[in-house]
Length: 299
Picture (cartoon, rainbow, N blue to C red):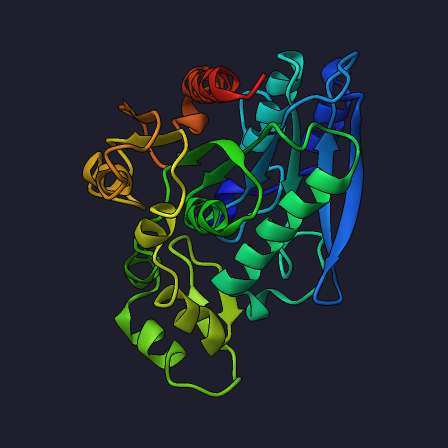
């Protein structure tokens, strides 16, 4: 996900802190391979042993996700607040090498992000703060690719998974973003960082292991190992993961006929759910996702 879609200004933090529904938020951390992963746990007021959702952010992002200009609130932070109002807890994390978690961004890989997602579910299940028999997952963009792998690999019984504008072919998406020459250079081997230019001009550095991991994780194959309720949200104006709705539909096409409820949510929205135009589409998506998950939570 583009970095300009994920900036977290101090004004946003202050605005979110003023919202009463976020009073139950706390910063947590756990370790993966000796490195600290930082997250925000949101517990609904007055609910004992609530169900919980793990949120996985996009490329170059962080755990609060894109700030919606009209309200000064990150999309994941807003989702956590709205779901808490419905009695559902959530944990949103910064992957290692991203946000406040340990490590340099250049060392990011899909494999590391998947390991972080798996560890986050483990942390939730043993935390004693939520119901470990009622867990769900939401992943956005690259977080959708990561989420597909986490859902397919976890030992925990997820009641529902929601993938928002999910990457289905991360190698193709990154090649379109950076250009083929940058990706070829990134695949050349060694441990020397490659400088890549984002579409809006910012430069980042990534090591060859990142580029290699793009070809080693197949979200479509990964999600076939998950056979419970799946919600896939896509936008027909998405110019990051496209064409739509075909790219979203493919995540449903390879599931067994006996798989449980699968829903393709299609709207006339862009990769950030029209967030720069206001909150209407974002709120519809958050609400529909929360309703889908709540409907499938084990009693």
